[in-house]
Length: 131
Image 1 (cartoon, rainbow, N blue to C red):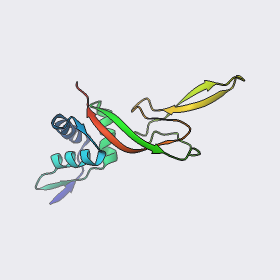
Image 2 (image 1 turned 90 degrees about the vertical axis):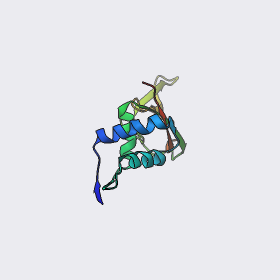
Image 3 (image 1 turned 30 degrees about the vertical axis):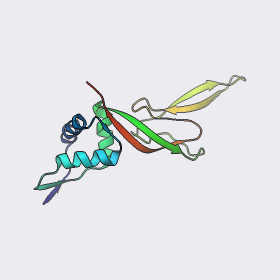
C-alpha cells in the first residue's frame, strides 16, 4: 500500500462530501477520521493532519467553527491566532486619564477572541454552512 498527501482541492472535495452527510461534527479528530476515510483507497493510504484540515475548512467558507476553550496563562503574549494563524486584532478602550488599554484580542478570519485571561482552544465543533 502506498502513502500520499492529498492536494488542498482533494481534501476540500472530501470535506464537502463529509459535511453533506454529517451536518455537525463534534471534534477535529472525528472530522479528520471521516475525511481521511473518504480519501483513502485500498491502494493508497492518506496523510492528513487535523491542523491542515482545520485551515482548509476555514478557508473554504463551508464551515462555521465553534471553539471550546479553557483558561490559560494571562502573562502569555499572543500575536497570532491559535486557531488559524492569522494576526490578532487588538480591541482598545480609552481610560479615564486619556490613555489606551487593550481589552481583548480578536481574529477577523475565524472568530476567535480572548481577554486578559487567555483562552486556549481545546475542542472544535464544525457546523456545515448552508450555501
